Structures are given as C-alpha cells and as structure tokens.
Length: 483
Ligand SMILES: Cc1ncc(COP(=O)(O)O)c(C=O)c1O
Image 1: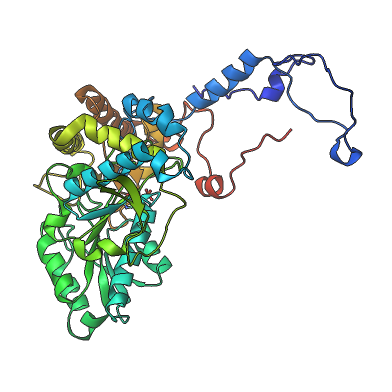
Image 2: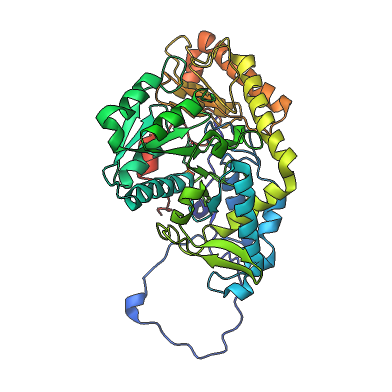
C-alpha cells in the first residue's frame, strides 16, 4: 500500500494557533514603510509540537545511513560513528575562527598537522594538503599539480591525460576543466586497462604530449588492477605522471600504500574511506597526497610544525589556494577522530571486512545477478552485476523495487562499460544478517520478475511518491511551498 503523503503545514493550520508568545511591546509602535508591507501573507498557523512533528516525519521520508542499508557502489556509504560527531562538536573546534591568529589556533593546527601525517603514513606519500572540499575537487587539484610540474620544467606541450573507459565521470570532466585533453583508454576483456592501447598512446610521437594518466584502483568494477605497476611504468617512461583516484581506498587502507605502487599524486575521499558524513552534496574533503617531487606544488596553506609550535605555510611553487581558509575543518576533525580511534590494525580490518562483505553478497546472488568482470577472482570492496531478468525487467526496475524492501538502491548504470550495471558496495560496517537480508531481497525480486513483473515495473509502492522524472527532479526541483 502506498505510504500516505505527509499533509502540508498549510493543511494543518488552525487560525489563531501560535508557536511563540511575544512579550508586551515596551517601545512605541513605529510603522514600517508601505513599500515593505504586503496585504496578506498566507502563512500556516501552528503550535510548536505540530511543526516539530511535521519536520520529523519529513526527515523520516528520506533514506539515511542511520536508518537503512545503503549499498551505493563507489560511494562508500559507511556508518558515521557518533564519536566523530562528538569530537567535531567540542567547543574549541566548533568555535574556532578561521581568522584567529596561529598563536590562538594551536589545537586546530595540531589536528591538521596530525591528520596530514596520518594520511601520509596511510598512503606512503611525502606531503598532503587538506584544502580540497570533495573528491572531484581533489582530482582538479591533482591535475593542476601535474600540469604545473610539467610547466615548471619547460615542458608545456604535455596536454593529454589518459583515462580508462571504466573511470568515474569526474575524471574526464576534471581534465577538461584544467585545460587538458581527456583521452579514453579501453579496458581489456578482464576489465583491466588494455595495455596495448596504453602503450600505443604513450609511444613514438605520442609520448611527448602525455601529461599523465588518471586511474582508479581498485577500478570502478571493484577489481584490483593487476598490471598497475606496469601501467605506471609505461606512463613514467613516456614522461607522464600518474594520478590515483582514491575514491576506492576503502579496499586498500592499511594494506596497500599507493605511493609504493608508484603513484605520483592521489586524492582521498575523507567522506568515504574515513567515515565522515556525505551525500546530498554535503561537505566533504578530498585531501591530496603527493610524492616529494611534487610537494612544493601543493595548494596551501598546509600545517607545519617547528620547535616554536604549529603554523601555516604556503608551498614555494604552490598552485595556490583551492578553497577559502583551511578546507572543511569540521570534516577533518571527524576523519582524524576516526583514524585515531581505529589505529593501524583497525584500518586494516576496515579494508578486510569491506572486501569480505562485498564478496559475501556477490556469492549469495551470483546465479541471478552475475558479474561480467572478475570471473573466478575476488572482488575488492564492491562488485558490479549485470542482471538479465526476464519480462523486460531492467536494472532501474530492480533499484525501485528494492526501495519497497527497505533498502537504498545500489548505484546503477555505472560504470558505463557494464550493460545494465548494478554496483553494490556494502561497506565493512554491516552485519551478516543485513547482508543476507539484502541478498534475499534481490533474489526475491528475481522471482517476482518471473511471476509478477508488473509489480516491479510499477515500484516503488511504499513511498509517498512513485517514480519520478529523475532528470526533471534533479534539474528543476520544486523546493518551495506553493500556497
Ligand atoms: C571513483 C570516483 N571518483 C571520484 C568521485 C568524486 O568524488 P566526490 O563525489 O567526493 O566529488 C567519486 C564519487 O562518487 C567516485 O566514485
């Protein structure tokens, strides 16, 4: 049965009802200029409790990590521990002002310095900047660093960035924004980078124009790129640098250090791997790590430490600021709290369990939801199924029907190289019971596809609204009450 829509505040309005009582006026009445006044204002009249209940009910209409399983592939929607929130709410952090002098900001500076150091240790990079506000922002920062490095060596002909066809859309978009040319490298039959195509793009006359390669490892197919060292070496031999899209670091944290593989620069989504809240375009942090050769190109200011205490420093050849002040500071506090709480052993367990959970679901549903890539191999933290259900049932229908079962749909139709892609990333924070319940829901949808396809095609049934025109909803959202 369709969930009843929540009545508009206007419909609950009772003339004369109030949520506030103002004290008697103690100053003379002064009329406002007529130009500021309206004849009428049709505001709902309600008591405080009705307003609180209204907005609480509205908030329950949304999916959230605190409410439901949220296996959104490539997004690492893991639980956001409440301890992180407590740390971010400490008055010393909450009330610190970005314009306060360094001498009065020693605690905040120490935290930023500690986080830089921790991320350096986790990735193996020699320097980190915490400025970028999102993964895509970190990508732009990294590509600008690569460009600045080439230009600093008088090598300004290098304008091509090679990008595997499984990449996230932000990778080519970033290159274009940085004034470089995004060039697609196809995947081979196993979902890895086609080495022959890469060699061709990096050899002969082509070599002189290679600025670099942007690659996600594990790839967006959830597979570890087995040839990563060779891939990096091909690009380095051509004189290019290698950018790591670190959005999938949840599978590697505590196990593999990207700098050891040969990456030159990489962003980390602190709002994914390091458990800070995200979604809905909320604040994130796309910290960028680089090798020693690129350290002076980082955006600043970065936090440093001397015998006199902590201070900010602008790297000598910096690409400049990419964000006002010091990045999304409250996100940094949460990420640091998470890292300290887990420690090295805990972070390693994060990766191990995220991989185990993804493979567990995959094994439970693989008959009905086969993965086209990765046959006979372990997936990393996510897997991409390519369901072939009867009666013209598509991945979009499966996603909508999952909502009726109480699960947030996985990512769909990405990566683009997988037909009808259904990309599941359970994360490490889910119990076996939740994973099994989700797998049961997927299997029961496969059953429904055979026996009652209309039920799936008309899903969701238990939500206040049914299927929307998603493009119009995203581009022309109706956010205001229209009386
Ligand atoms: C592989 C990959 N790269 C980059 C990004 C961009 O990260 P952000 O959404 O923080 O900008 C994402 C986000 O989903 C991603 O999955």
